[in-house]
Image (cartoon, rainbow, N blue to C red; front, side):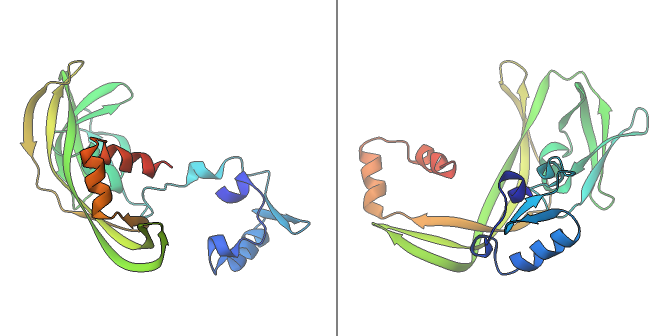
Length: 217
């Protein structure tokens, strides 16, 4: 749907995979896609399909944030970002107001927060681990070997910093004991020859910055 909103679909099975034809037919039957001259267009009744799709989480699971001062629901937070935003001790912003998270009930997926006038904000510290599950494709580009495959990302929030507003001075740190989160996905990665890394170091170039820039290429 998102792709069809950008451009009409054609014979794009190579891009979208073996289930493309079947899924395209289903969407056409539902009236979501309309065929014209072997091109499939998104129905004009669908304004912007991307707003209903979350690329960061496919679980559909949410955590409730409850204001303990009024025993009312503030809002819900996606499970994929809950440990970053509503961990115990977090300063949570809602409609311009600050709340201090006092407890996070994992079993019931509920965070309890109270209004606060704290002059700091919180920033999580996490450990991320990536495991290659399966290499599906590979090719050589000069001296660089490029891979495409299935991976599993494991992220564990291990603590948080308290930073003063405006100055960003670290005024405190607290540990957290939260379970790791696992995220299966597809990744592209490459192996750089050691001599390339050594050359970047000798020329005092920003290796980490270069990798980050590659992510946006």
